[in-house]
Structure formats: C-alpha cells, structure tokens
Image 1: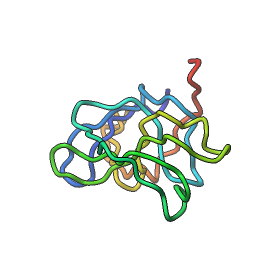
Image 2: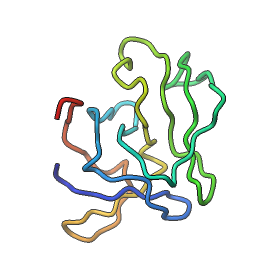
Image 3: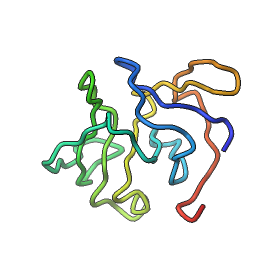
Image 4: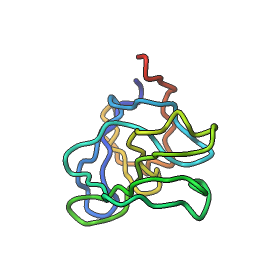
Amino acid sequence: PEPCAVFHCCGCWTVLGDSLQLCAPEEPRLGFLACFITSDVIWEDSLLIGLEEPLLGCAYNALSCRSCGLSVGFILHSAASDMAHLRGLFCFFKDRILCYLLENQMVIEASKVDFPAVTLKK
C-alpha cells in the first residue's frame, strides 16, 4: 500500500510495526490504525473497560512500548457493532506513533497520514 511507512513510538522511536502489516480499514474518526506488531509492543494481561470515547464501554487490553512504556494502543475484546471488526486486532493510536515514510525518507506524525483502505482478505 502507498504510502509505505514504518511506525515508531513517539516517546523513544522504537519500531512498532509498518504499513505493509495493516489489517483493517483506517478509522479516521476514531484516530487509530489496526496492524500486526513487532515484539517491542507489549500488552497488559488485565482487561480494561473504556470510560471515554472512542472506547466507551469496550473491553480491551492496553498496548505499550516495551522500551519506554508509552501507551500506544489496545487490543479490543468486546465492542459495539461499529467497532466489532477490530476485535482481536492490535490497534495503534495515531497520535502516539510517528511514521517514517519510505518513499520520501520523511518522518511525520501518523495523525497527518491517510492510509489506503485494506481488508483482512487482502
């Protein structure tokens, strides 16, 4: 997919994933990406319940950067029907990651990048 990017933690620049591993359509209104992750992302064992949007009422595990501990996303376990397609996927908050764009060798906030729609079937 274009643009090809490597996802880095905003706190310490650890590589967390890349755009070739995107596995669900981007959620622009919610501000996160679903993709496969590197071993530098860890998750809490205990389930949390979202008390604010976009995770209000959802059960999830928090994801954090192994290097600096920054909370970078979540794994959704239960949600309303509009987010059901994200259950079990690793989701990064776009405002917690940076993108290194391979084509032009530029670093940009992930919240400023629009990624193409993908599906689990691709």
